[in-house]
Length: 316
Figure 1: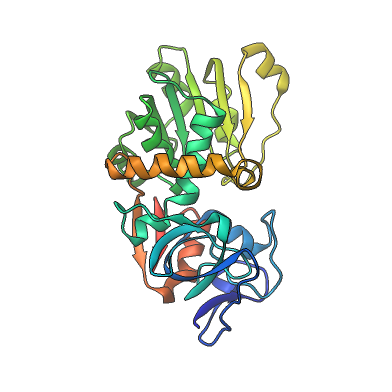
Figure 2: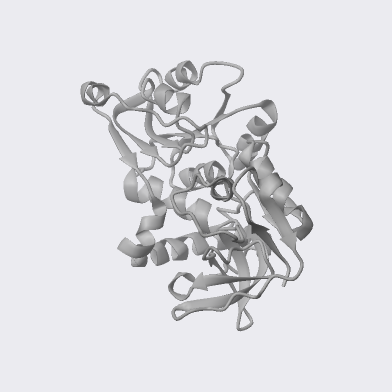
């Protein structure tokens, strides 16, 4: 089969090589072989290529964490099992982690649903308990997981403020439905959030960026607000001042969505059912900015790594 493989760690464009004759993976007990129809590009794909992700598959491996595929003639979505990842004609999946693809979404949209929308769902509903009428601040609002948080925040009845970097991404966030969009390159998002909320601040912060995004969020969080730490795409991992959280009466919550697959798999299936229903209503639809041929996978992963993409890039 054709497969992109990584034999040495480094930047995706340099270490991902297309193998036209890679061996088809053999499923072990509890695994299924899936024919890949589309694979979504995620930021962790780049981290895995660099050897910077918490899970490090043995070399050589095929990257690609998320897919829409076909098993026994049925469309399915879910996570690929590395080292037999999704950037290949065939991949492996955990049988318990195979979900039916929502009928309302095409292959590319379905491929981009699982990780981003599950992450946003658990962050907003399971961790932060977002309530109608609250103000939600979303960092990287035009990105893959940020765009999901914007749509799910609006679906939950929240007022959504999106923070982006650049005018083009600001336009995307507005199209997604954000009530207010702040270009962090053009001004101070802390002051803008305070002004928009009458000085009260945001009730919930969705932060997949870290660094200055997290630090600024602590300055515009509301009384009894909740900051959900989802990732560190900005590269800097902040060291929070817990005395500040005590004095201002806000909470800092972590989200490692992958843990739910082993700790509470029923909750993952329940969230999938909710997301499928919202997709059927047209309330959520993954923002697929590019649909690229298989030969362009390495360049796509590099663009996501460099922060030069909006929404999700999907490889056919």
